[in-house]
Image (cartoon, rainbow, N blue to C red):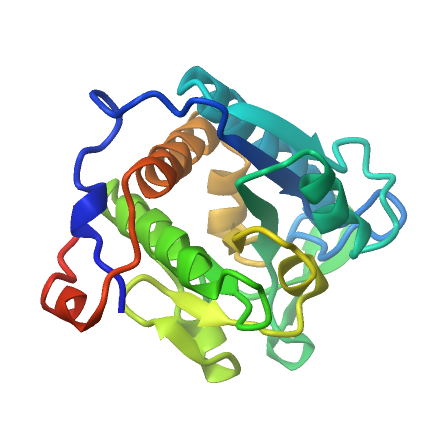
Length: 244
């Protein structure tokens, strides 16, 4: 268990990050763009937009930031954490958007195209790997991100709990040990699913630049709190699971 109390001071008044560097990975590539939204847009396009907002929010807080795969040209998943390691990053966060199992999709017509959708699931979720060399810090930062986003009114999805064990159910943090971008990283690493792009309503929300900036601001605030103040605690931390 890990305390969130150490991350209670959000945004202003936090100490300077000093030389702390964060690597922001844009999930998928131009050649393999991930899921397709209900209206036919690639996941990579969603990932890149949110990642750029996050980079701006982190830099506004004084962090040095490296954007990995901004051009969508990195083919190897192992190359992403290696690039972050070469840059000396204190944390890697990989930005993604979620889909739905094929057997749960329905067909519809949009703009003259036959596409698929599922309006049953919506919301963000987070993933960490127990094969990462700093699983404890990975879980802590994921929990703080989840707590901050919920405090801002963003609602998580628990659909991934059907397949992935929870590291923290309250904040929708799951274990996904085999993810290369997480387990090959030498620093703490978190994969963030911003929402379900197969959901027709949520897809439109996820394309809203104002909402993207607000979500990115929440993530940046949480990462700042985790990296500057958060310390893994012992069993006594179990008594303090409140949101900041």
